[in-house]
Image (cartoon, rainbow, N blue to C red; front, top):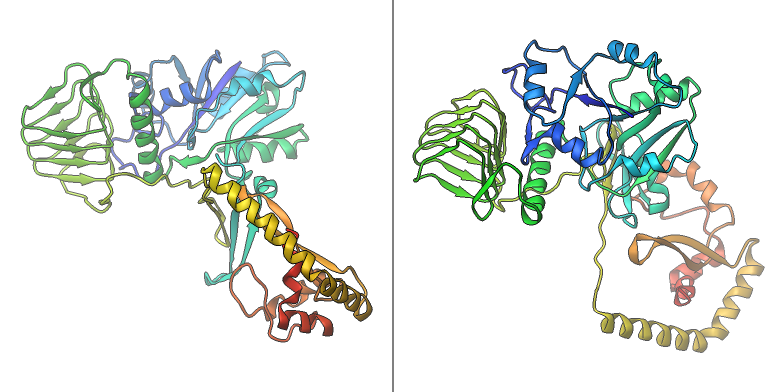
Length: 474
């Protein structure tokens, strides 16, 4: 299998050194490239090609090869096309974009093994770690005013994520050689336009956007805290709990280190330096006396000047000016799920992830369920004559069903039909679209003081709240 990994130049990196890129940045005990191969391309072997989306600096290839333990080859889209011209028709290409970073390890081998003779393109799409979690879509106008909020239950949320959360693609080699792309979303669109058979495979994971400084820092924190607690970092010595140091590191005795901290080889930490984790210090760094580095990642060859303070920042080159714009009192990052959960599909809408709390006390749950059933059954039995009268009156007053089932969210983020006595005309849902401009409330609800869809009997039921009684069945 051929492997192609897209490389980018994040906007948070300084203009110099120009050879830096996303894949060359440190992450945990390796580079972003190392982590991408270990996290996504588990147990998959093949030639690895790097596809930069920027002009290649003369020193770029050297830095890339020096920052990874894997043998890689840098190529251009045209160069990749030439390499694919003579491959076997059944050969597949795995294309990975580390900019969309999964918070859980997602191997491409499972996807490759599930093909069963399928020779089309497959795109692994992240749909969120919690499959039962409900999401809300906020629709805004050109002035930024909220016009509508739509609640998306788990069964209908995947299409909202599919345009942004593509982890990797498994594509026939001959098909890749005929298209140009800068992202996996572009690749999928181009393949569909050419008539190539494609399918999406949902993957249960959240995403971090490594093209944002916050997302990249959060990914580093996750790797430092999770891997540091389970497996030792190869090539590093844990000199204190949570403090990992590479070879040939000069660490002054007066330096103060607060874990988790990762210091790469050939780094010098001078007198009175303070390092607050989660922080990763790249290879060949120099931290001058009295400097402070808190919740940062320093690229290879970075020098932090005397007395300079950096907080919540990715730095490279020579840093002579303090930057404390991102200080966080909690000392930890909130994972900014910018592809799923904070996913932006454009200026006019935003998809945000909801949450739900769960009670783990079985006795408490059993008591509540017993009360629900006993009380609801008793009240339904007592009120059954009234319910029959209301049902007959509804049938005589207007045509249509007696009950109206409104989809509501229940435990676990799933939806259920919430029953009510029908108070509107039978085609009220279709009429609502024509009345949208008269909506008097903001948010997912629709409300009009004098709603023309409400029937005469419906007004009485609403005024007395009798329309809610069927919810006892729920």
